[in-house]
Image (tube, rainbow, N blue to C red; front, side):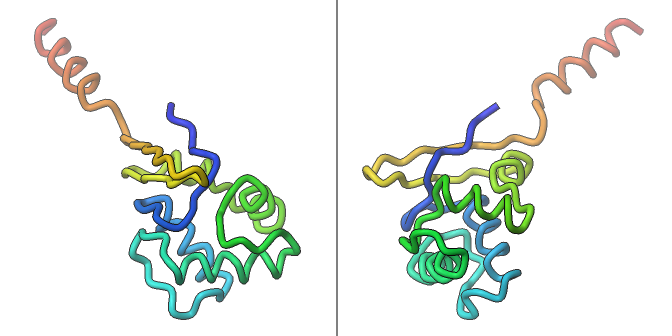
Length: 122
């Protein structure tokens, strides 16, 4: 199974960004935040507000310290949620590298072949 990249910063986009946006709106941060799956200025502002409120470095980037705090304070396990939500996310890293994850809910090929084998055996 894929591992979620360490950082999610401005320029990242996809399903996992949308999940972060839902988390932030649930905390009533980022009233102008739109659930569009794009980590832009409004998402970064909402993350900064939340980080400041939590007493961690308010840099607007959702990295390891932010994930740890979200899990400890709110029970929001970002990695577990992302790994169980089908879709694609591109994570922009601090060095500019882009990392992609693609979560597929099940292996379609395996399901097809199991079905085919069951028919052949009949």
